[in-house]
Length: 128
Ligand SMILES: CCCCC/C=C\C/C=C\C/C=C\C/C=C\CCCC(=O)SCCNC(=O)CCNC(=O)[C@H](O)C(C)(C)COP(=O)(O)OP(=O)(O)OC[C@H]1O[C@@H](n2cnc3c(N)ncnc32)[C@H](O)[C@@H]1OP(=O)(O)O
Image (cartoon, rainbow, N blue to C red; front, side, top):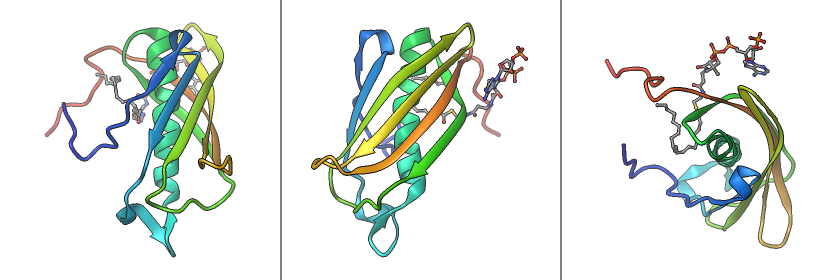
C-alpha cells in the first residue's frame, strides 16, 4: 500500500543491487531528545538501504532477518542525510550488506550491517 507517513525515499540502485544510495531529511519531530535525531530513525534508514540491496539482488520481496547498528556521532534533524549500502555476501537465501549514514560534510553518523531474506508475496501477516 502507499504510505503517506513513510520517508518517501527514492533509492538509487546500481549494478543489480550491489550498491544502494538514499537521501533523506528527517523532520524535527523525529528527534529523540536535545535535538538529536532518534537512533531508531537512523536504524530505519540503514535498514531501508540494506533491504533494497536484498530486494534488488533477489529481484523479489525480501525482509530484514538481522540488523546491527553502531551510532558514531549525533545527527541533527532537518538536515539531509546520505545513506550508502553495499552488498558484501550473497548465498542462496541470504544477502548480507553494510551501510553508512553520513552528513553532507562527510561526518560519519551511523554504520550497520544486515542480513536480508527473500519471501513470497503472501508472506505479510493479515491485518486483524
Ligand atoms: C509481501 C512481502 C512483504 C515484503 C515487502 C518487500 C518488498 C516490497 C518492495 C518495496 C518495499 C519498500 C521498502 C522496503 C524497505 C525497507 C523495508 C524494511 C524491511 C523490514 O523491516 S521487514 C520487517 C522486519 N523483518 C521481519 O519481519 C522478518 C521476520 N522474520 C521472519 O519472517 C523469518 O525469521 C525469516 C523469513 C527472516 C526467516 O524465516 P524462515 O523460516 O524462512 O527461515 P529459517 O529461520 O528457518 O532459516 C532458514 C535458514 O536461514 C538461516 N538464517 C535465518 N536467519 C538468519 C540470520 N539472521 N543469520 C544467519 N542465518 C540465518 C538459518 O540458519 C537457516 O539455515 P539452515 O536451514 O541452513 O539452518
